[in-house]
Every structure is written in C-alpha cells, then in structure tokens.
Length: 195
Image (cartoon, rainbow, N blue to C red; front, side, top):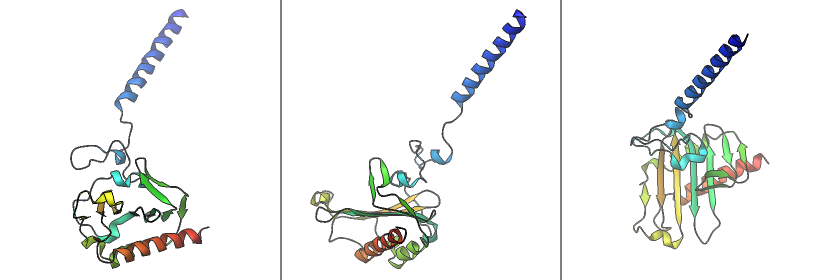
C-alpha cells in the first residue's frame, strides 16, 4: 500500500511540474494583441483594436478606402475653449460620451452609448475629403506653446491608423471647422437620442 501511495505521489508531482512548465512556455497574449508594428517591435502587448489604444496603433503606410475605417477619434484643444473630443466606433455602433485621451489611453468619461447609423460618419469624412489632407499642419515646431492643437485619427480594418494633426488655429485644412462641427453634432445627437 505504501508503495502504491508513493507511486501515485510521484506521478502527481510529475504532472504538476509538467503543467507548470507548459504554462511558462505558452504565450500569455493572443495574436491580435501581438501584432507587429512593421518595425519588428511588438505593441507592448496592447490590443490595437481596443479603442482605448487607438493612439498606440501602428501608422498606416498605404492609402486605404474610406469604407475600411472602423474607428474615428477627433479632438481640438485650446486655452480659450473647453476640451471637446469625438470618439465613434463605427464597427461596434458606439459613441463615447465625453471622451478624453491621455497617458492611460482613450476613455469615455460619461459612458459608451450604443447607437445606429454610425456609417454616416464615413460620409462626413468623405464629403470633406479628409484623406487628401496633409498629415501635419504646422509651420513652427514650438507652435503648441500657444495652447492650440487638434488631431484626427482614422483606424482601418487592419488595425493601422491614419493620423492628421496640427497646432496652429490659422493653419488648418479646407473645411476643417465644418468637419469638426459635423462630427460633434453627430455624436451629440446620438447621445441625446439615447438619454
């Protein structure tokens, strides 16, 4: 009987050690979270498809069709006006209420609202021909000291992001203010419909 118990104890310990070894050698993240940035570096184990990490996603290197856009983030910041941002997840039909982006990523301070017709955002972007905009609008690298900045991030189905940005109020793309107003109006209208 002692030999049988000893034999079972040895087998149990062996299986336990084998299981621990398997746990150590298996990856702890999914392939989606480990997408290569194109420079041979991993994305710090962050899921680039999570809207929270849109600003950490790899930059798009090829021109893509507007209908491939799955997420849109726009913000404009200045000392003179309150911070107003728009975050729309077209793929999941969601609008972020009172979004803010910072070191911890994108957050919806007042929650996420399920909506319909988010594909209309693609029409807004297309009507203002954002894909023809320059990537940067700034003539002076230190212009941000004036307190003004804006950015528009478009995430595509492949996870890459196209980024447009600027830091001078009088140097913005054509129809910039119209685009900003239409995006804000769309988000505000959808949030109000769901209150």
